[in-house]
Length: 341
Ligand SMILES: Nc1nc2c(ncn2[C@@H]2O[C@H](COP(=O)(O)OP(=O)(O)OP(=O)(O)O)[C@@H](O)[C@H]2O)c(=O)[nH]1
Ligand SMILES: [Mg+2]
Image (cartoon, rainbow, N blue to C red; front, side):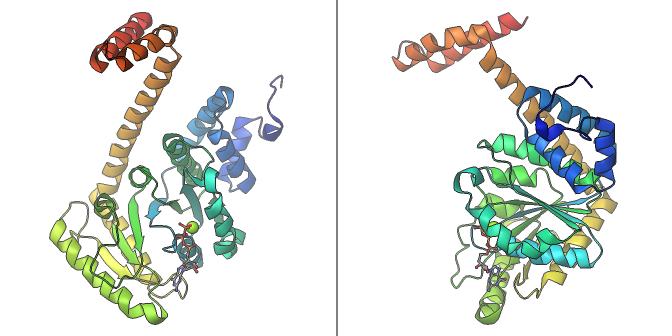
């Protein structure tokens, strides 16, 4: 018991095995603290996090991992509130995580979400966790990926990972989830709403939200436009229907949500049966390993004394045009590797 930890990691969080057991029994405080621990950048916390995760890995993997993206204001929070409650009515337990590297800056979406996900956040079968407040997307994504595993070990059957789509965040979320949902709004024109083509290609299912009241007609029209557009631009493996479905729905009235759920369930069970889901997860794991290697290498490069002492002069010479960027990079890499060997 000689360990000195920050106040937030006091008993019963000293004992990793008791902590892991509490988490697996569904103790929300144990889960919450575990996520706080994995979000910490303190090296000793990192080490504890790694050991805690190791205990929980064998119990992870059981959830349907659902990615969700859409432009600001399209209704993501409202959708999660309604869809989450629908899942709970069906007997599921639902965890919601967010990847939003900008949230620390704006704070806006978290404030909004308190009201938009009010009922869901009070439900004993839901667990909602805002994005870790780190500015680098890589760091946020890494923590979120680990948080998914923790939620699974805690018995949540559906984990929804929401992103606002800053930079590469959609790619990162698609790379940690099984099924990726794109929310769009009804539009009058024929334009594809400035949704990045890459994001459309990642989507397994497109939901035209706000299909209620006066927008019900336009939502239906938008759904048909997108369905036609998608038929033209791709066929892809991993989907029995070749192209993703486009479904109108309303997060406010709840109409269409049952169809969304059925579509996800059908796709997920087909992918499981055909081996696509495990294949996708295995590929994701390999990509994350690669990513962790690059991260580790880059951190060790930045911390290398030889690099630290040589870099300023090399940078000056590159700036002054005395040395090519390639030659400078080769020189500093050589110093780094020499020191390592
Ligand atoms: N009519 C209608 N309005 C909706 C629907 N879903 C969301 N809204 C409204 O759209 C606005 C934005 O909804 P949010 O759920 O906050 O959207 P968001 O995508 O989470 O927005 P950010 O968090 O800012 O990215 C709110 O005023 C909602 O009430 C819907 O299905 N129908
Ligand atoms: Mg929101």
